[in-house]
Length: 106
Image 1 (cartoon, rainbow, N blue to C red):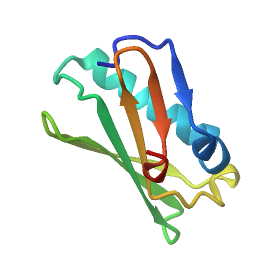
Image 2: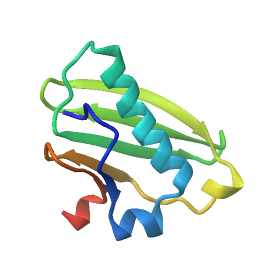
Image 3: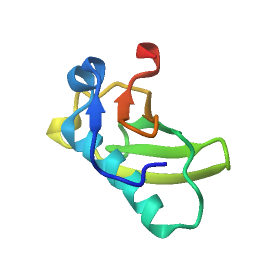
Image 4: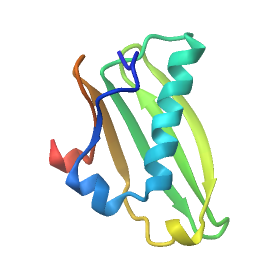
């Protein structure tokens, strides 16, 4: 899964609610996991976002269920991210297309 960088799509909800900076960062995290080749990526990649206004940062939890892995990342809250309120994002690879979507769009 996630062997190619072609045929990548985002849903309308992602386009409207997730800043490009976060979209690109999530794609980069997937690409990095693929290149490390430590673990086979599942068809469903889950990203959870925990905003910490006191530290002016957003913690990004990247995980999958089979085989299980979890990794933690952090981005600073910039002006572009000041209104970002999404809690969870999914990326699904159906072997033909890769789609970034909000869970409520599934």
